[in-house]
Length: 168
Image (cartoon, rainbow, N blue to C red; front, side, top):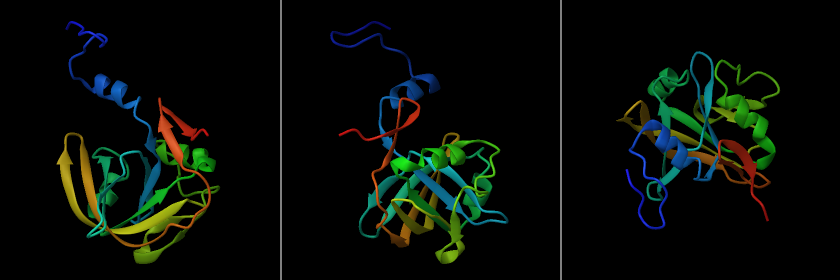
């Protein structure tokens, strides 16, 4: 493809193009959890506020991920907003094959039996209202039931393939 004035070389749409473009998009970091035979969880940068009335959120989850079978059946999920001090926690929940709930991860069983992580900036327990197929992922829409916004600190950000802190 050719370049337009002020634009670099255009590339056809592909998974690599999408990943390259979204490396430029800074996103907050969350961990999604659910209770199954064993608790499951994963790091998500796709968390969105969908509506205030009713209070709805959404996130994407790979249908091939180890967490998906539990998320696919869960009535409730936990949403945890991570702070800049939690880079290692974010990495643990992003790592395949890790025992994500083993020490040093600190957590407890929260409302609706959902695993709730300690020390986060904020958390919600949400009731799942929809699971929408989207390519090799599912978009989960959930309604907030209960939560706590009172954690201290600054948010963890994901940008250029790395966890980062906000700069002043």
